[in-house]
Image 1 (cartoon, rainbow, N blue to C red):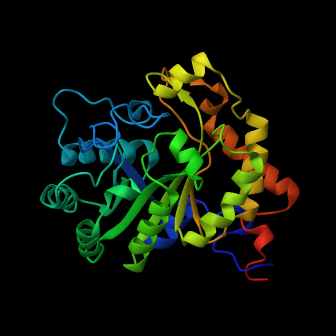
Image 2 (cartoon, rainbow, N blue to C red):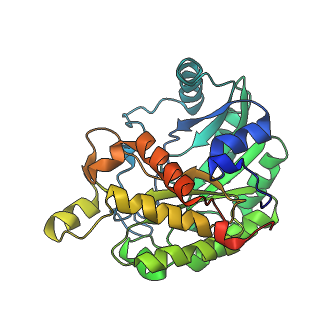
Length: 313
């Protein structure tokens, strides 16, 4: 039996397992909206955003006067204590690009959450082309004071897909930024999307080895879905293309996990969207059932994350 960082019966390295290993108790992420935008929205790289994106499909509605981040966090903690029985919390800067601002403003925002009781760290979601050396220096300072993880929107390892999706950066940019961040000892997560019409199934599976080479600490896997008020919604209406159905997704993710380094923490295996925002596919609203079926498929095969890599054997 290989030496794995997770119980073999779990079949993959679950984020909940990692958090308990790291903090010794139940920790829950509190999603925050700090009022940022993106370079594909404000005119620097474009104005329509990435092809598939409607940020409101997964984050809180943004009012004219955004609630202060610290207030969002305190309110989120109160809810999470009741609903999820969590002991400690991570402040998750999630909406849009959370390093897209001045150093002074970023430092003020990040530090504003550190003195909230029971907050044990910060998660920062951003784009790989929006982190320069000055921002890395700030992040390096922060990690000396608290737990810090940076999550990069990689989205694909194929430039043809990144161009189709109007990301405005290449995979080389992702790789270089991940390397720089990892060299500072900062925990790095990645976000990837499967199901683009520009990629074959074999290309998706091949991306596992590419991601393994990046040295990522964690990974979120999202299926391509079509949400309202996205550019993709208009495109899909005019020219529909195949999207993964539930059964094929379960097999694809099982195949992918078998090829993925078992030391990469899995933070997500299927995307979700707020009720009323999703156009298609509708099966993804059954997130808990999908996760159970992926586990059952790996159990049926008697395999696990990293099975084909023979790590530790």
